[in-house]
Image (cartoon, rainbow, N blue to C red; front, side):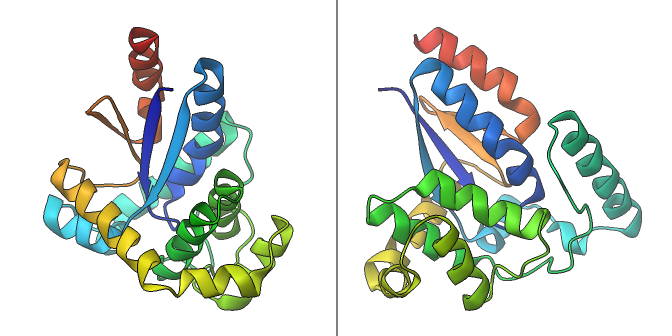
Length: 199
């Protein structure tokens, strides 16, 4: 089965905008999406990117406008200036990884976490918010949180981050297919072309 690696941070607005479209695209081609949450601060630093929260007022204003436009185009609810952004994405990333390690509904949890930040104004660094999302995904928060706290989960988080850095990834979301990287949810058409070639 063809695999699309999805390198992202759970606090990424553009990852939110692209997540459902990515899953639909993968479904069309019978491909598997491998969710790989990363420590975006390290990815930004190694890739020479300026974190969005530290960009100029002018650029941040345009970013909010662009996110609103894309949300309208994809028929997604959005708050382009979320109440809890920026926030620490690591707790949510480890929670998503824990769900994956448990063979749970990782795509559902990744999407729920992204939407929590960008459409529901929830602080995804908060254990209460993560517990709510886990329950909504049909999972036991206490069990998942225990797995999220395990060293193996942190090791996967670090491995995802290093894999992104080694691949030359510098932002979120980035998709990797057959060794080729595609940065940004507005590059999903190119992912489609790659899937067509692969099939």
